[in-house]
Structure formats: structure tokens, C-alpha cells
Image (cartoon, rainbow, N blue to C red):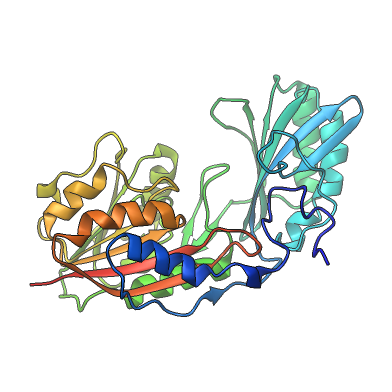
Length: 357
């Protein structure tokens, strides 16, 4: 029996029964393809349903009818969402009033999107539409934010940069005790439980560190991992998205961590860290995008860093990237699969490698 009325139509869930997908086995197979056939893989870490705190929802208008939800599998068609076992109830509760709001927006002609990030102070809203936002649109959006206790609301054209419309309270997410103001629509881990599991596996994978040890963090985002690492060592972070790096830098300075932590804006796909830039690092932590680390891997492999901790959301890309390390003296110490996306075929993982002396 389907767990959701949208199952088989909405592209958010790939299976009706999570037990039919062996996510730990997916990681085992990926590591074997990379040349680590006997890798010690932990049991799957599960995360609760109805805890997803980030939603990027499609919107379409057909006359007076508004569809708001996820896309049909392998299609641009938006499935109007009437229930969801994954979303945090606080996000799901916004969908009905959002439909009413969207129906009134002149900026929505045919299609758009609404990104909702659930922050400490409530839902952070980013509206991306296919026409200009009129003055009445802007007033309606601000009133919606006030009514629904949203700390911030932003708008953007279809392919443009977000424009801050109103900040009603400081839009903050707390990362390992550090208050960070993420940019509108920022990437965040899907759930707090998933984030905690990733951080726990990363910290468990660190080597014994000297007082002045240095960790390089690649694809650092807004600091989700970096702020967890900084109590253990000095952290030099690198992030390609300027708005995310700037948010992290602001939090570093506000928390008086500038002597122990830094973040540089650097697109690692176009300008990877060179082998010499890894010199002296006790460990490298990387959390690349879905496609993997690409050209960065060969420079990392040549650097002979003592410990590498790779966080992945794509076993296929993980297998490709780790195969670069197979022949240069790395041993797999631990691998942890994390089911941050129940009912999907996606699995998060944290893999710890040590270079043999």
C-alpha cells in the first residue's frame, strides 16, 4: 500500500518500501568499484520522517489553478502536493496559504519556485518567478512573512540573483553552536538529524591532532562542518559560492574565530587546490557537490595528506573519485552510510581514509 497519495507520480520518492533498497549495500558496491573491496562499512544510520527542513518547490499557473510541489519524475510537470511524509510539518503547513498568495502574484505568469529553509527563527523564504515583482506583490510577500512568522523573505527573477525584500528578525541557523546567517535559498543539510550524523562520523574519523594542527576543508558551504572542526584544529576552508563563503566569514568574525578559522572564495572545479597547497595539513575534509570533486582529486592524491575524510551524497561519483586514491597508498579506515533521504535511492556517506606510511 502506498505511503503517500503522490507515490508513483511525484519524483520525490523512488520506492514505496524503504527496505527494498539496500543503501548500505550501495555504499559497499561503490567502495568496491573504487578498489576498496574489504572496506569496513558501518550499519546504515536512519533519520526520522517528517524532519526535512529544506524544500525547493516548483510552481506552475494554469489560469486560476496553482500547482505547488515537487516535479513528476523525469518531467518539468509540478505535482500539486497535498501530503508528504518527508517534510517538516512546519514547512508543509505553509503550502495551503502559499497557494493563495501565489495566485495573487503578478510576477507568476507560468512558472517559478519557492525555496523554504527552516531556520532557528522560522521559515526563510525565497520566491523565484518568471516576471517582475510589482509593488503590490512585494507588499503581499512582506505581509505573508509577517503572518507566518518568517524571519526573512527574498525575491529573484528566473535566473537572477536574490534580492532581499524584508528582514523581520535575524535569519540564523546555529551550526555547532555558531550563529550563521545563510544567504537566501542556501544549501543546508536536509535534516538536523542527518547533519548531526554526518558531523559525528567526520569527527570520529579525525586523527590524533597536535595543538597547532591544520585541517583543510573543501566545498565548505556556510560552515556546517567547519564550525564542528574548529574546536579540534585550525581550519582553512574553501568555497566556490561567494554568498555562502561570505556568510561563513561573517560568522567566523562575529564568533572571534578569525585566529583559528578562515574561508576563501575559490571555485575548485575551475581552480583546484594545487598539490603544494596541501603541505602541512593533518587532514582534508571535503563535501563536494553531487557530481563529485572532479579535477581536484588528482592534486589531492598527489599531496599525500595523512588523513582524508570524504562526505558524499552520490555513490557513483564517490566511486570515481576514490579510485584516484586506490593506487597511491590509502587504506579505508571507516565508512558510514546515512539515510538522509528516506524513500529515495540516494544515500549520504562519510568515508575515512588514511595514507599508509
